[in-house]
Length: 340
Image (cartoon, rainbow, N blue to C red; front, side, top):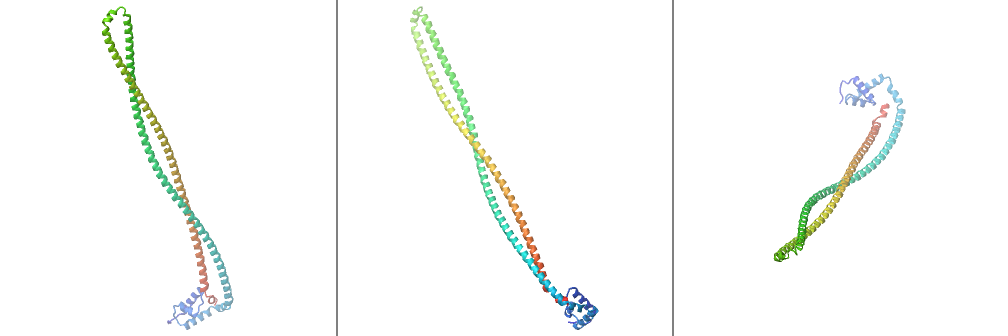
């Protein structure tokens, strides 16, 4: 809807605004710039007056419009071709880089999976070694308890052996006393016989009178001698029994000592195995730490490659955006109107 009271200054301002935007100040363009108001006849009159005031600059532009349009068309085509070449090169380079990144990512994922398997295998081995270590520790404790028990048994057997030794010495002393008594008795009987023989001739009468008494004495002595012989035999049997018991105890002590030595050797072997298992567990822990460090390093590499890929994609998107803006500019710009 046209409005009344349109001023020449307003038309001039709209015309200058269109020229600043590199647009041709036609009647319709000026009317649109004025908000679709004003009479086209009035706008045309004011534009004609303004062109006359500019001193014919517009006519000069009309003279060179065709050559400028051709030049702009050739430049536009050349820019389009160069832009297409650059875009194709960038896309080809981006495709190669994407393939390389994809291959690197695939290799890294494969290596990370292998490292994960190694880590899981190391953890499984570590658990097995810990379980074996625990079982070995329990076995060592049992062997230690058994060794202490055997040591106590050996100490008890040593005490019993000492008691048997004391008893044996006591039996030997008793046997020696019996031998001494028997020897003393034999010596006294011998001396008595010698005395009797020396006094035989002088005291034959007395001996005959005392014959019965002497016979009784001899019988008593013979009984005593028999009893002493029996006691000596019994003491000898006791001594032999004690010696056999001592020999059995010595054999038992030897067997216990051999068993204790075997248990000590087995304990030493278990201790060596325990040390080896602890060293193996430490090595497994070191390998686990190394694998974790390698995994972190590969994760950092993957992150770096992802950043490079994102940067390349951003560059490609920026270049596509610039190309799109150039195309939009070339399609939207009215070169013919600009020249006119």
